[in-house]
Image (cartoon, rainbow, N blue to C red; front, side):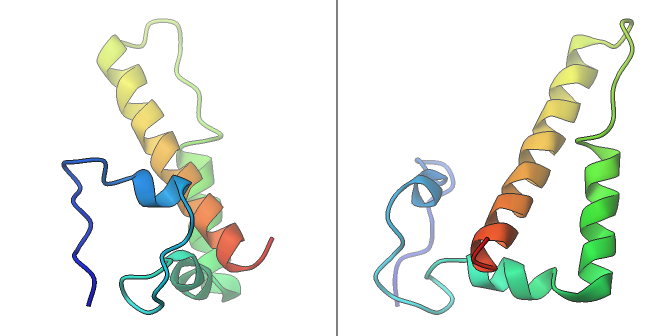
Length: 90
């Protein structure tokens, strides 16, 4: 079994590089994301996440903290969408 991802030391690097050689739990997570969000319930969850983050805007009086928080949420939803699409072969 491969070592778990070290989230404190380049833990996101596995998303950018070549897919791991082994399959299964420590392999590419994209197929798992695709299965998780397949079907009408998955589509509804993704639509809700997009509406709450990617399609949301903040007004000119938004604080720096609020902007950073929303941007972090958007990044996470974008990552979920990318993994789901990759797992579906899109």
